[in-house]
Amino acid sequence: MKKNPETCAGRRSFLKAGAGFLGATVFGGIPFRSFAADAALKPADRCFVFVYFSGGWDQLLAFDPRDPAEFTAERVSETRILPGYSFTDARFPTVPIRPDVAGKGRSNIDFGPAVGELANHYDLMTVVRGINMTTLAHEEGMRYFITGKRPIGAAARGSSTATEVVGQMMPTVPIPSIAMNVESYNEGYPGNANALRVNNRGDLLLTLGKTKVPLDSEIEKQLVDFNGRPITCEAAAYGAGGVGTSYATSRGQMQQVLSSGLDTAFDFGHSSNGELRTTYGLNSSNYDQPAGRAALVATALKKGISQCVSINMVGGLDTHFGTQTSHALNQRAGFDALNLLVKDLRSSPHPSGGNFMDHTTILVYSEFARTPLINASSGRDHHLTNSCLLMGAGLKHNRVFGYSGNVAMTPAVVNLRTGEADPNGGNILPEHIIATVLASAKLDYSITRVQPLEALLA
Image (tube, rainbow, N blue to C red; front, top):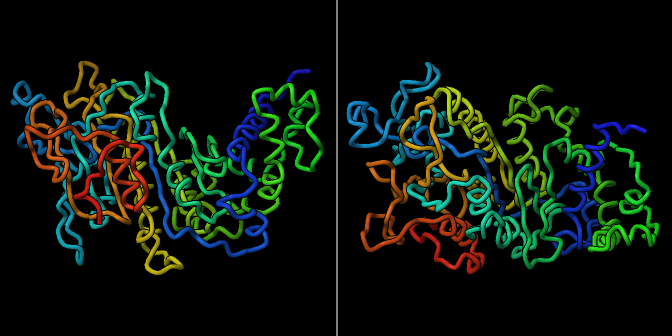
């Protein structure tokens, strides 16, 4: 009999997402039934959001801009930098942005044209420039930033930063870590530090029980039998590498997840989510677009479902040809969604005092950047020198650390204590960023084998 492709895809998603719970019978060290019985979940006192822009972003349009009056086409043979702002359209400014919002003081950070209204939160930001990615391969750069360890070839090493956070802090929330369309790794922590990995919001609803997908394999039925039927010899053989045993030890946990009604929080069309739809401008056509992804992050944190959310906010950035406008539009969509998230967290009181941004650290990154010169196809290629954005709790704000060179935007050589130019200094690497994120919550950062950027710590 021919299988229904949608049913098969849903079943695979369900099994893969469910595997995020393997190896543990409690979340955060507390039996899940405690949460299921308590309608008012308590948000984590410290939250983390890891926002990935997929494909390699153009930093001239974002966090490392240049003044086109200085870096002109006439000087391009000298500077090897062409901002290209005039190649965008009327939706974007043609010069870098330096906001000045009443009550916040003037921004010390220049932003590129694609950042939009997110730039108005400069009083919560630190921008790190001149990061040397040491790779131009997508998978390697992405995994390097996720773990803070240089991959071996394309193979990731170590745990994801979210796993490190959850493994050390053991938060008392139902699903400590969610990873949406982002890779996640666990090296050495128990199963309750695993992320619930899903490709999209539909997978999350599926895993949490919103949709029931028929299973057409008897072995699969046994592996995800939440009613307590023993794993059979056939199933055990199927799971010779430990899959069967892992499902056997976790199915009670998953049964409790499914019965808790957490899926309603992520069903944006539900009658209880009217305020969320208004805040994020949601309708059925954009639930799974960047604004919907930002709403998912806010829901997971504010409702006390998760401590860490890692999310692929926007893609379409691996463009080697075409216009600046298309790349700027893709980045702007991600930054606009992030702006909605930050506005929401800033305006939402946290039960421990202050607002949610007072309790949340955000890292925004991409695997590398784009070349400062426009190629023969009117696009930009892969470039080693990257930058990133840090926001929120545990960090100093309204500052820039490091720089890229004014010739070809080369990686910085800086004093790693101050961020200032120092010929005897070193490169800023992704592990310095990850060490800083961990240190911002006073967590052990020794896995990075470097010191955090102390000048950025509050």
